[in-house]
Length: 323
Image (cartoon, rainbow, N blue to C red; front, side, top):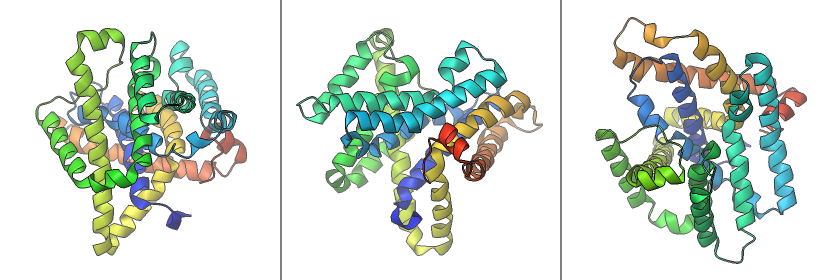
């Protein structure tokens, strides 16, 4: 039930999926040099993975077989279904075979890696760090951005584990992250996350560190802002009601991610070109594309709400989750 949920965490999930939708809408303006997209792309997938890591805390206490079974149904069945449908409709060949709903594949691998790590008789903080380093140096560790995003998955898990201690320092952590993220934006250090491999780390170590820290600071900034809004909303019934409605959308992130893959990435981006609008590029960048992303995110939410009533659709595309 909604009343049993933590509003600001669902709000964070809503912001994460909204940023994904907005980011993909920039494919509708391919010739535009976007400022907003550069900022969004620097942290929206780290934010998504950090949130997933936070909510993985209980699942990673399951036995290996139960975890694999649960996540196979929740993540890999939608991957298989989306891949088959996408290859049938769009005939993308290898690109569709490997890239369709790629984040769900990466998330499954993060669960798998983290669960194996928990079998090792060492503090999980140490094991997670060592496993991340191994993924950074192993060949093909950067496939599906696994070695990069796994870091945020682990951070999310550890945030949940040490939540009481972290809450003591939540204000300075938020302020430091906000300050550092604003510095990165002002200095134009934000950019889409690059694939990480050993070559990139050796030849561009500063870029690797900046990419990692900007992803972290941007994620903490969003989480802190959502928590602050939730706290302030007690003084405004309108704000509280608005945040409550948006947080409900945040409960449907997996389904929205799947639907937007087809609706935004595959269909609308091929037919709609927002850069043809006769107005200033700044208006397109800061208003039209984000607004379009918001509208489409809400549309995807309603599509999921309606289509999930069909049990087969829910199992094949939404992981059979009970919303």
